[in-house]
Amino acid sequence: MSEAFKSISTGLTEALEHAQGKPVAAVVHEFKPIDVKAIRSQVGMSQREFAAAFGISLGTLRHWEQGTRQPHGPARVLLNVVAKEPAVILRALAS
Image 1 (cartoon, helix red, strand yellow):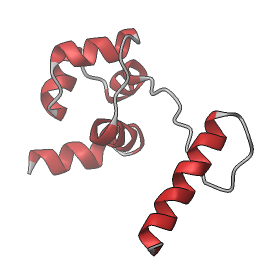
Image 2 (tube, helix red, strand yellow):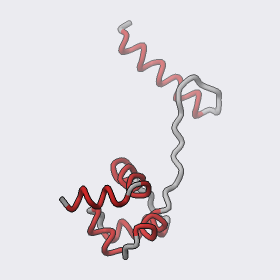
Image 3 (tube, rainbow, N blue to C red):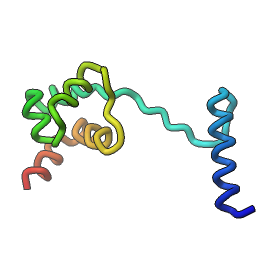
């Protein structure tokens, strides 16, 4: 059996055990919901301004703020950085 197959097999076994509530050695990342409205308020922008500044559709931003959807992937990363360093992101986007 190849090393790659062993690694994949181990990962799948751990995933199944985790899904069954068993303790596993794998690192499990739990993501907390992001309060997008609070981030936008902290930056001091309207929904339109925030969406335009960060390349987010207005509809998507509204869904995030209403809690009917959650940001994922790069959008989640961007929002976390905006929450911590909004001036840096805005300066980088302006240049």
